[in-house]
Length: 188
Image (cartoon, rainbow, N blue to C red; front, side, top):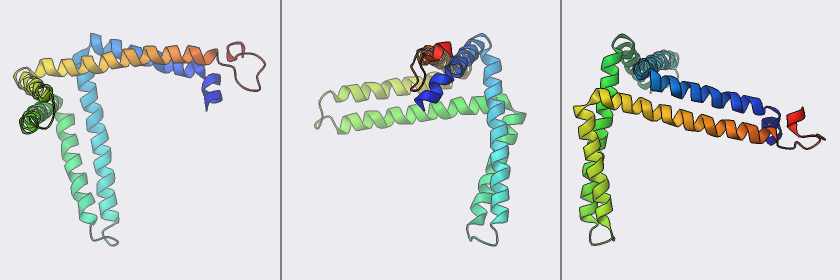
């Protein structure tokens, strides 16, 4: 595996460059990036739903649980239609789901901190984490558009950092000696 990576170091660098380009594109056009991600979700969900419906219908004679695939497929197809026809609604719903999750998680963390206060030290850290989770959820509820942009910027930041790391790895691989070669891969 190492030999294959060393011989194809330039592909690792190319992946890094593409990740950085994606990251910078997401920073420059966060709205477009958000819509494209929603559309990709919609297309994936549509294909997945069609496959699940096909699986359910093809298993109708073989399995008593064939209907589960059919229902799953139909739910996926409905989600895909919503995502593809109303991408802004889908984006809002995604942010609101994250907001509900953050608030509920925060409440549960505070409850856990109160219940564990006699059993662990520094339980206030868990409670503080819960308060921060609730604050995040409230922010997401109050500012869903800003939250969507923040999500895109987080993904963009990750892509740029990951791209830089891949480029560094690619150039290190380029200089790696491959067993059987008399020279480093760089001269190959």
